[in-house]
Length: 357
Ligand SMILES: *Cc1c(COP(=O)(O)O)cnc(C)c1O
Image 1 (tube, rainbow, N blue to C red):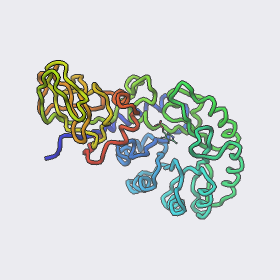
Image 2: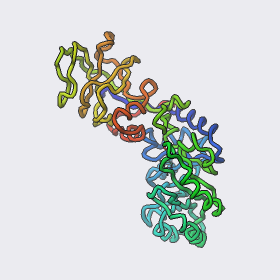
Image 3: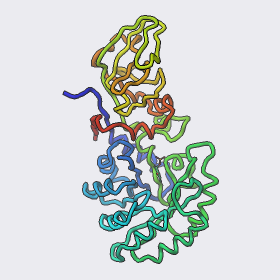
Image 4: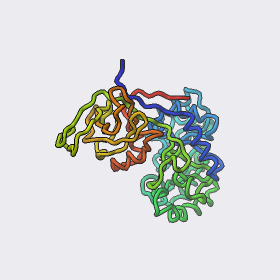
């Protein structure tokens, strides 16, 4: 009836991962970061799964935030980039959404609201990433301006680390941010997954874990499972054809793979139009009916090939895990020169998604 490919989401794994972060974090509160459709895991399913654990939720687009309110999510919701225009600032009050203010323009939009329904604002500080936020020397003025607005209630001061997952670390940004944060008297919110797992002094009042909730590691040198997390996303597809190769036979577009010996390969119903990275190298890990193998040749739009030479039992209908509990997404990402974040959030809508609760 349908093409044999599916994206399975384990909501118990997400719950486990949240609990794991809770045990490691010193933050008083944890806001689950569920932007980009919860990194491809489904924003409503994920929020519902965490509704009894998370202190709040953080995401980007107001449409998703409204869907959460309509699905009965009552926790605080923070828009990580704040309103994108005046109409969104008004909708924030209507739906009881908080969020960042990183510019004077946003403050002006928020100022138009009413004192009866003040919007909870997170003052966003640029401590070195140079993406969003007020510079440190502007922080006190920006906060004074917010405090003067009846339609706004500043609750939190936030910044974002550029290198929490790398050897460079967070000391430089934290040393800049911390005095301004302390002086503000607001709740302090800085730590992403990497900082929550590796930099306890930065945990502050509110932590913002994203990737770790989904069971992947923010670090280049460890998988999520190695850290104690459980991968929540499994992308799998079935073998739809088998080819027998002779030495010197080529596979796929561009003859990127040439057989050195006789081989058996399986053609899998998954390609880059499903979100599997086209640039994944020959030998990118997969699991065929639970047995380790690797890709062969270039990934096509709707298909890719895997080596079955050592798997005589495998054939048409065998299930191939592209990433999940058996195939760490971090390894697939490394073979494609990217990050688990990108793979998770780039699975295409045409892949049916099944959430297990
Ligand atoms: C995405 C994001 C996070 C979560 O980061 P992870 O590395 O996925 O834990 C936290 N804060 C902000 C501002 C973000 O954009």
